Length: 168
Image (tube, rainbow, N blue to C red; front, side, top):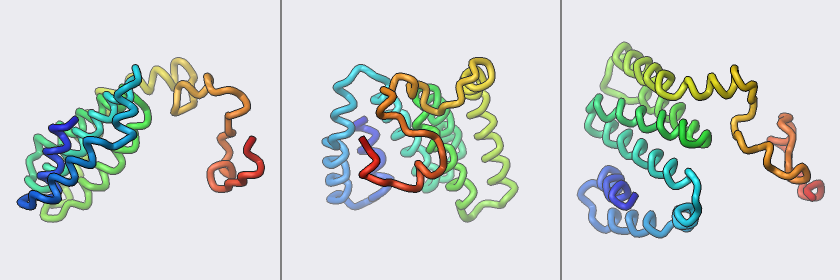
């Protein structure tokens, strides 16, 4: 993780050592990352895979190496198999891929199609098994283990309206 932070700092702040050092120092002691590494779970692995995918996407953006684009998508597929919360990365990477200037639209669309096909081929089987075969409709698989008093329904108003007096 530390080396990925160094690599990301170089991609973000190339040639400026002070911001690079500050970025690495802050990332090294982020409370959320330190907390996650002390527990036995897949959170540390998914954070590592997601950070590595972000680093590769940043490097692809700057250097235009197709290899880095597809390596990032490979890591996103592995992260998706590790934890469902990583499913926020592929849509963001798709937007980044389509917004990159200096490339023809046909090349962008081909690379995006190939990346999504690779992602679906590597991780799609798992979501097919969960949704179609097992009939699980929840994105978060452990939702059944939440005590009934803490559960929130999946209705739209519960996502857009917060009333602190009804919590309890």
